[in-house]
Image (cartoon, rainbow, N blue to C red; front, side, top):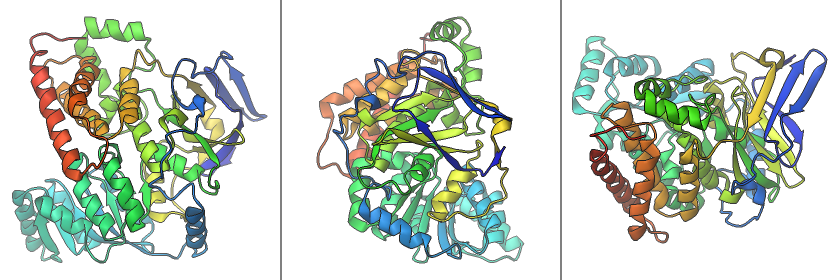
Amino acid sequence: MKLPVAVSFLLASASLSNGFVFHFTPKGLSLSCTTTTSFLNGVKSGTLGTGEGWIDPSAPVNSEESLRLTLEKSLEGSSFQKRLSLLGSTGSIGTQTLEIVDACPDNFVVDALSAGTNAKLMAEQVLKYRPKIASMATAEAAEELKSILSDAGAHMPIIMHGDEGILACSTIDSADTVVTGIVGAAGLKPTIEAIKLKKDIALANKETLISGGPVINPLVKEYGINMLPADSEHSAIFQCLQGVPEGGLRRIILTASGGAFRDLTKDELFQMCRDDPRAVQAKATTHPNWDMGAKITLDSATMMNKGLEVIEAHYLFGASYDDIDVVIHPQSIVHSMVETQDTSCIAQLGWADMRLPLVYSVSWPHRLKMPYKPLDLAEVSQMTFMKPDHEKYPCIRLAYDAGRAGGTMTAVLNAANEMANEMFREDIGLGFLDIPKLIEMTMEAHKADHKTKDITLDDILSCDAWARQYVLEKSETMKAKILV
């Protein structure tokens, strides 16, 4: 049985089971359940269906206006051309976006590239795509880029560096879409400035909404731009919502691979943390399904990545935290689901390939023909789903708590996690379970200064810096012994 890379299917059930398995055979599809208990029993999330706490989405969904816009753009046909500014061109998001440009040269033109310090790779990209601006993170890298291009006798774009260079790339007049592939709070200001110039955002920078949602969402509405998700889960939700009328969405179901420790029980993981912290460190930075960067791989192991995606889904699609669920799906074939008011569940399926959500973010609402491997459900054979253990993965609870608190708390959560994540990977003596401990301590300390109204970018950046410093200071008390 062969299907396109992205397919949708309906689950005629209002709630998923605690654990269930789809089996694909030549005779068809069968479903077996391990229990009949709701997998969300005891979890304060989407099954409440209260409808309270919904907000205006930043993605073009859930409104009459977005439906009309989608139809209008769809009828334009696939002969469109978009001009891209790519922030983070030498990273995984950047290089995969450029693969899409290579596959569809008639549809995309690259006007600006920004990168870190990899001048050699940037030079190759400049030679190939001939952008108007190329920016590096440091002055030294920018000089190296100039030298390489000069020696090659090549086209010389405007070469810049640092924050000024990133801003120049994000605000270049000719680009209509900015792909935000840089990580961390550094992506906030260039995204805001691009929005103010009415450029669409292909969103691959989580911090834009997780930390900056209270600032970004009002700007999206004010300037009328399209915020288009470029990661797999939110792209899946976005794709599932195409054609769903205003008021039709009831619940969002985010799928998670379960990360490196998904096959261990809570007790087995905690014992491993006590007995062999080195083995935990090695395993936590290796993902079973996806080839990702070190930071997000560790976030997957703690499942903070899914907690952060819950917050991002709230801002992107407007759903309340009571109407966003998480379910573990080890095969990473179903990338996420939505439940509509009539209790149908619509899912988006595909191989674990980051290029698929990226191509939709820069081509929406069109469907470009891509040279990717088609999905073969017989090869998949079966798909399993189970509830996450919130005691095993306390970061999920922390993310829901921060999201419900709102305001600056999500910026504090994100910054504390980034700092704890980095220190764990740098092997300074922190244990795996110290990561959620540090995050929770930081959130608790922030309550005295927590702000929920009239939040500015300066507030977000200030809270981000404070949280990082707080985690750094608190970690000093943990270095003498590895806490688990």
